[in-house]
Image (cartoon, rainbow, N blue to C red):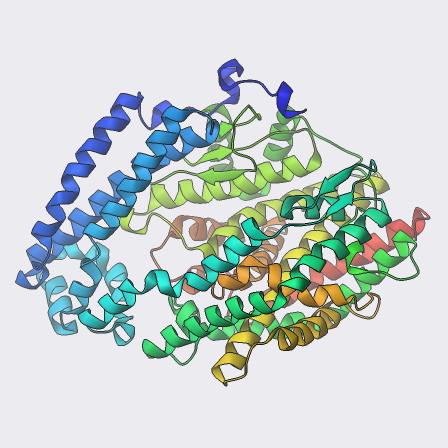
Length: 605
């Protein structure tokens, strides 16, 4: 469907849209809350300086800030959902802008709280808890803040660092503007032989082309641009890494990695274990890559051959109504309590299904403590969209359980935990399809989809994590991060991951220069750990291991009531140990074995 034929928002069937009147009955109610919170935030200064006055004042200050935050989240959720359903609607553009401005104002108004709390002694803080029973619910939150005390500086030093925030972000901002706005990419030919100007989005599309000449030209032309500016990108990345290392040292951490992982109280062993286990199992990726070479029938496999489909179009597709029924059947192993929420999501208009003019692209789950966890889709009949549906449903049910089982203060969850729930659902769907689909072509497609997902999430993101740790440790040792040095290491690292079946294309050594995640500060490893944990959990659930489902539901209900590592231990996965990644690798190997056999039997390899 072309953009010209997309329906207007007003033309959609109501049942295919989400019901945002559950948040506010009207836009006037939204404006009333916006006005109220704008007035209430002025009271924040009345609480500043009172935490030292006693337990009651301590409680009142904390409850004021949490209540303000709770109201603000509802305002922001409504405005961003309204804006996303039709980004061309100027009314909702304005409301979203109002809400964003209010977020910044509230953040500024309450920024005194943590430094003031940490100005109190441990004895004074925990004395308050003994004195005031109503504080007990906030113990874990306060423990988390107090644990950071050794890394919090004086009020004056903190003010200096806060004031330099824009300066610290300059390298990242420069990279973003350079990569997204200032680079001019060359013109290439697409599959139809038409001349098109390359862009980040088009690059990904053309690398999936079945025309090898298109893929090769796209790959080489795209990297020719990064080649011209490699020294600039080495400078922005190197400066950003220096900033991470400087701040870690300033805050008395041993390393930038320790500082980053401390935000979620993640032991560094989690990171090291991931790198070690994945490194040990790289021969599995080499096997899969070698099979891709065989299936494509090429003498030499290049990096630009890694994303083109090797089995053609999907042999099955689903309409939205079919996908709903398939999802309900596939997710049955998650039990009645879980499925009751899935049914509610489908029947109670949590989901905005179809594409319309101006609607934000992609898919997500969103909401806040006082709303249902809404899902945005842009539905097109396909197997991939079924996977998207169960993925986002995983997020939404996780949010629902958390908000209905935790007080507001713990009614959210960390990024470290977020992708586990969604990917568990994808894995359970894969298990269901493999258990029910007998057609070898369908099975091959489902297996290939899983193997590609595993390759892109566990192997590729771990490769990124290994590179990210390398550049931080090298900079900490005083080694200059020149373009030549980065190219050499990244090219060798890529060869190590993909193995001997792939040619050592010189262009891929420049891949580091175009990955925005390297400016996120030890972020990408969470994709790989989350996928691995989801694989282990879904395996236990589908096999109906004793206690597995109850443990999983407890994880979904835990929110921020404990540190992420402890939440996962209770779910049955110790992410400080290698076992959960080893189990994921066993699933990958078993599915690779079956995929190799099917494509051989079908005469494709």
